[in-house]
Image 1: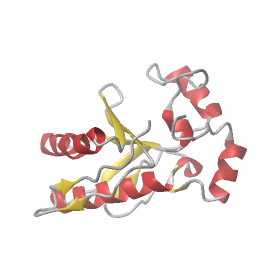
Image 2: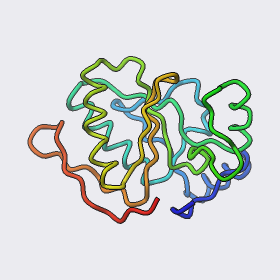
Image 3: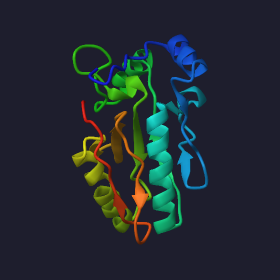
Image 4: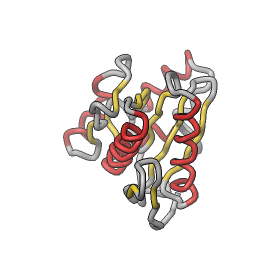
Length: 175
């Protein structure tokens, strides 16, 4: 809410935001795949989240020579309510504290298939961005993913030296 992002209510609302380019496609590539079970119209996110994903995937692929997987992206309130019926970890769809997936700014990166070195690399790559106030990360274990909310202040990573190192810019925070 502090970012000025409203919740996406239903499929019609989602389609409208996609048409107005308020949401863009998850930037799938050789370095970033999307879980095949994710509905086509839910493979969208905010433009700054897409930029973050492209940066993360590019730097990860340079280091590990394999893709990351997006397991979840934008959700609607309607979809979240259905998810709550089958997933005990699903956040609320309504109320003061709800899933940030409802804004399109949050994505999940699957941990399934990541080796211990990749998991450690992810933690160390994400931490400076979180400390700078550009993202919030929750490492989930039951659903085995990195749940990442990207803020408008996200500053693209700039590799320094080898592809596994980075600098982060200090943007304005404001969660």
